Image 1: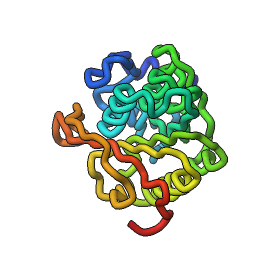
Image 2 (image 1 turned 90 degrees about the vertical axis):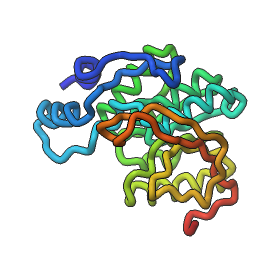
Image 3 (image 1 turned 60 degrees about the horizontal axis):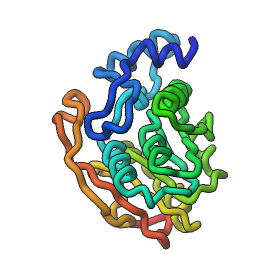
Image 4 (image 1 turned 180 degrees about the horizontal axis):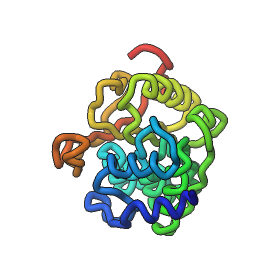
Amino acid sequence: MRAAHFVRSATRLARLSFVPEISLYQVDDIYALWARTERELGRAGLPPPFWGVAWPGGLALARYLLDHPALVTGRTVLDFGAGSGLVGIAAAKAGAASVMTSEPDPLGRAAIALNAAINGVAAAVCVDGAYGGAAGITAEVVLAGDVWYERDLAEHVSGYLADAAARGARVLTGDIGRRYFPRGRYQCLASYEVPASLDLEGTQALHASVWQANRACPASGD
């Protein structure tokens, strides 16, 4: 299966209502996309195709970057757990010197490349395996949208982002208040009411916030 062809055939290209500066290849029904992915790959038990949806935390973070471009202008940026590449694309549009993306799903990486191209920006995928592959990447700004939904992932992400902050990187994350987000290590910068999927979130709008990691944040404890 050609990944780029699959992404184009399984999605529709649409402009984001909350971030109209950006268009993405998206789906209305992530469960149908999930089933189609497993069917066409001939594999069961695949992780959800998170790349097919613009998640609310990512929308909030993308909006914040476009409204506050000085955070990334002229700086190197890593979009960690990039999904569709939404946040990295916003950083590129806001004037980042370079944007790298970290996404373990091969179809997600194909979606990032397509989404970056359609938005006229460059977003180099820096890892083709687990998120640990990003450990050797150095960036001045590290972005993470909607990465706190599952305990094991959140623990890994939390440690990685804490280390990045301790090294001096500006670490920004977008989240709707999911239970595994270690908010005691972050300060809130902004909050928005953003569109959400009724099927996925049980509502058509959610309160999403943008948070910045404390620079001297340890990797353990809240």
